[in-house]
Structures are given as C-alpha cells and as structure tokens.
Image 1: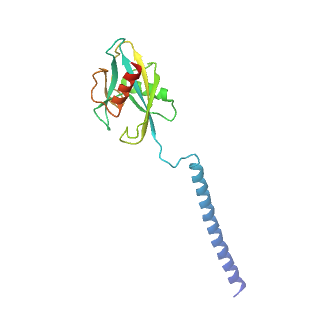
Image 2: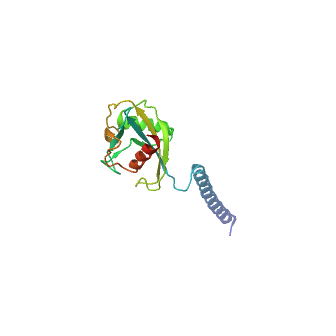
Length: 179
C-alpha cells in the first residue's frame, strides 16, 4: 500500500469523523434548544381559568340578574352568566370587566370578588375553574348580546330559565350568602 493510498484512507476517515462530529453537534444543539424551550414548561395537565359576572339590578326584591344566551356549544342556546376565559396578560377582575362588556355592552360596573368554583366536571370541555365577581346597579340597564352571546337579558332572580354549566348553583349560593 503506497503513501497515496494511506493518505486517501486517512482523508476518508477524517471526513467520516467530521460528519459524525457535525451530526453529534447538531443533536446537542437541538437538545439544548428543546431544553431551553421547555425550561419553564410544565409537563402535567393544567386547568383553564375563567371568570363570570353576576350583575344584579334593582333596589328592592325581586332583584333581576343579567344573563346571556350562549351562541356556541357547549350549552348553545342556554342562558349563562356573562364570562369567559382569562387572558394571559390580565387580572381576574380585568378579565371579568372585559367579558361583561364584550357580551352585554355594560362597562364601568364596580365588581367585587364573590367566590371561586372548582368542581371537577363543571365544564364538559376540560377542567375549568371560575372566579365569580358580582356587581349591583340601581335600575335595569340596556344590554345587548355581543361576542359569543347571541342575546343579553335581565331575569327575576327567583324565576330563571334553564342555565348552563353550574350557573344555577352559583346564583343560589349568591342568594344564600349575599342577599
């Protein structure tokens, strides 16, 4: 075997070593990128956070409560408290005010936190926890359905239509504890 053949074999070996090293380096870089990407990620399932607004009208009994008619499933066509999912960049109270405005047109309603409802199966889509805020206005205000609400309407709190999710339980708890 001549020098030229030995040099050829050495060059071939160096090329193979270089290719293996490059692939290994790419794999290390990809692994590092994935580790960085998921550095603050949580591998376990997480719940969804929502807010609901329980707005009452009237100075005396029977009070009226504001409900929206759901435009989409789940519970399409059923009545519900105005509310929805909390955005990543907003507080619970801000989300509640936003949802109330988007679904009914009401804004600047002073809201107070009432209670957090966390029953396991309260939403058929997935695990959802809601914090309910309440507000009171002296008289029935003009409302209209918007966003994912086909209609908004005031109902006597003692004579409600069939409601979605656990909103009937929410309203009953509010009546027991706050009215």
